Amino acid sequence: MGGGIELEEAEKPQESKAHISSDVGGVPGINLIQSLITASFFHDMFCRFAYSRFTHVNTEDRVTALASQHKLFYRICRYSDYAYRAIAAVAVLAALVAIAGGAILKIFYPHLLPS
Image (cartoon, rainbow, N blue to C red; front, side):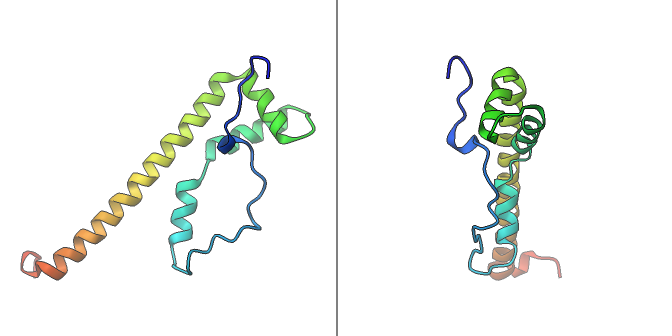
């Protein structure tokens, strides 16, 4: 496109994923963790803003038009999603490490725990 911003494949607006089964072996909580890590709050907000502002036929054209007009807003939304995902992934990993560390202490070093 002539001088516009090309959207990466992962950043293109997506249709509803309700038809896709994301059940991970029936393990409780995994779907919640997966949805928290893969959420794209800021990109969704950008797409909603583009949808309400432009009258193009499809959503991808609307998002492309808004991204070409508001490059800074687009970058802020994109990098905010990256930052959110990184923070969410670190939080999940920290929780897993804490749980694993507690289990290891309880199993192998029970004398170190307060009675």
